[in-house]
Length: 309
Image (tube, rainbow, N blue to C red):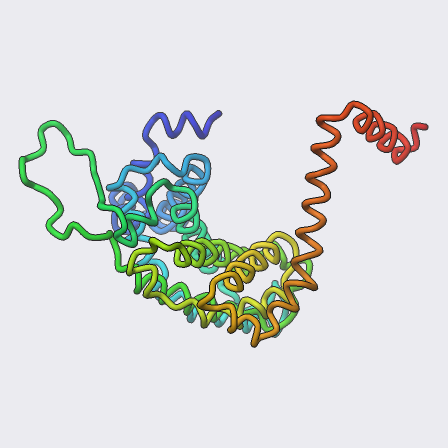
């Protein structure tokens, strides 16, 4: 497809640096503004990187991965205030309320989504970020001997990154039940992607061989805002949050916290029926795919539903 062609052309390596407004300014005409300005070019580059990364999470070189992580961390600065204001405005007047910096929230959500892809799908990214595995970078043949990264550590401080994400997640706690027309909005998507990201960190932290950087983070402050969000969100976002709360409850470090907040009851009332329905649907599909009698019965049911029989 077209995405694979762009990847084959090396566009991911080209687009990551242009996400930085300063770098993007070198790609635009002097004095350009609006749709042709550096900020808009950087925003379009971020959208492209997000789409290509979702298509091919393993396509980033270590160098570009480091560059992307540094950019994402920088983008999180000010995220708490942005999200707190947007959440308050949404509670006051709904998803279209004045005072919501929709563009700002959209861009923040995109950066969190890219980070979630890196942590959950890019091979070795979390290990490199937490220093479980060393960073290994392919060098050109003409690279000077001995010119290695003097720091040799992760691209960014993992503890500082998680602290900023926790601040944003806490600020994103919904104050009211999310209206159906806002369920796919940037604030809800932000909560869903944060839940996906924190769920992966929680699971990795519980592993026997978790590195010190992972063991040192504290996800307990997230229990209350996400249990509350579980009760107020819907659809796929609610499902992501439910999975994260389940992982918190399975981690001995946070199980009591979830229990004290009545999170287990919420999981039983909200998440369990969803999981059971998903299992039932998966079983039905498997039966239809492997059993001819079940397949024929499904065809008859579909025809009856459409009024053809």
